[in-house]
Image (cartoon, rainbow, N blue to C red; front, side):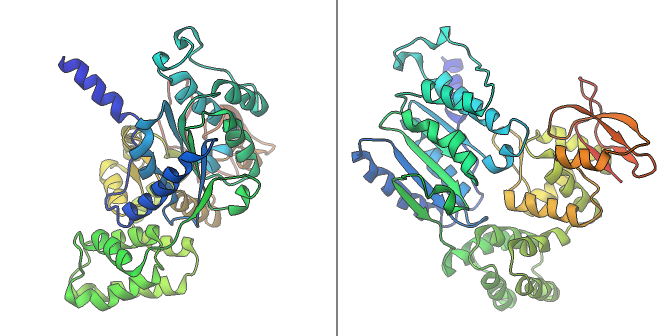
Length: 415
């Protein structure tokens, strides 16, 4: 009996998406969207909703909250995370199509379906995007599912992942998060929810919890903290990251540090400039480790990342704890390392404008390594295993991770 209860609890937790430590303003947003979803139930077709807003405003966090509350009400559910990022990989869209299938059509309770899926293949091979669209449309027909398509950014994402869902059951709900409203203009969505910045009260609450772990600022920091909060302009990601970077700086002697951060905030209008302030608070090895994670290690298990960092910088968990405390990285329910896409892009931007000493894209890697006098090195940089040619006179290669079972390095840093 105990084993059955534990198995049930484990299964119930499998689909829960991780949420923020301090969900300030989240309940209000979720209730507004839930009201939209409820009102759509009278329609003859499934509900189709867009969450639109700038990066860092809380689209994914809000979608996760909705998903966690509602997913058990459906036959199947899946949260398709970071589509813009994955679509850039070789066969990225095909892999996402396969994941949607695996977590919905192939995972539906056979007692609720007209067919017995035990006799169906547990993994469907997708040849190309068009083939994937056809299979999605066929296999999802009539299934009442909750599907979230997170960070949709291009017409190709809509065509490959959203339009094949038209055959879903009438009680289904599809939620799309995007920064690019134009990507939704051709789709007849039930409703689009415009994500707004946090108001003054919620901005203060969110910042104070991250900076002080309490709802109010110390008396001697009230004025400058109000100015810092105002400079973050109600953007949850900025409030969280800047607040976390100032955590522990509460003495009167720290006022100059707060004022310095305020000047940087006021000088930087774009989100990269704001987030970069937290990067500058890191020590040397912490900065390098952060860039390694942004380029190579997102989605890897925390244990693997710790081993990697220990091999490079002699300490792994300590660095990871610092990055977590600064809200630069997080760990999901499965122990995988996650980084907000805006923070990831900021880290990669730092690499591109600096020494360009990390390569994570196949096309860029091939461009860098196409030289005459060369030796072969077998590497893996988040794309298919390939042989690349490196000029010994141009770059030196430092191994940053032990060889895996297939004999290949999972990432290489060029210096």
